[in-house]
Amino acid sequence: MINRRLVLMSGIGSTVMTTGLMGCASPTVMDYANDKPSLNLQTYFNGIVDAWGIFTDRNGKVVKRFTVEMKCQWQDGKGILDEDFLYADGSQEKRIWKLTDLGNGRIEGTAGDVVGMASGQIKGNAFNWQYTLALPVDGMVLHVQMDDWMYLMNDRVMLNKARMTKLGVHLGDVTLSFNRRI
Image (cartoon, rainbow, N blue to C red; front, side):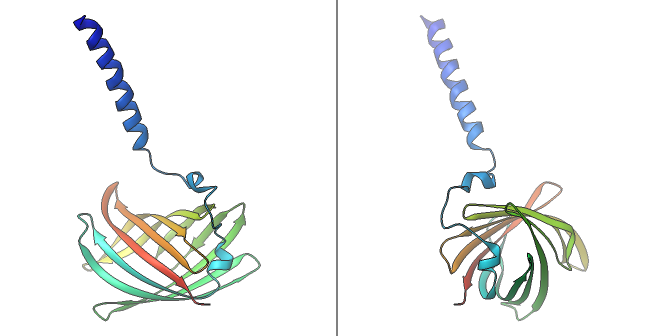
């Protein structure tokens, strides 16, 4: 009787453990393929987009607050996102993204502080892309990996969360709320 209970408990434990491990898998953009409204970067990032954001360290403490004004335009599948950042401490930064719509929801992009090419995929209301960012920190430049997710909420609002890592170590997160001017 005891052995049957151990075997049964072992089977339940394996099922729970397997289910738990499956729950730990990272999301993919395909998880959002049927979510609405459908995201079209050429439509959303066209005109002026305002954003409010924070950078939190790996413990969740807000380290930086900022706003962004983005001047966006697309022509023939090529987009320019001209971003002006204003940080709470008064410092400023500029980033100009040059994007290419490769079709089938695939996007590539470059910017002055992006090492190599950023690449991503859109499905449903979500856009996920990865890139390496050259980040100035304490007089040095660190190359950090960005796993960047955007979720279209409606025709004006999009939420963005990017996870920042270096050699697989979680450094922090960037969280933004975009508002498209109409």
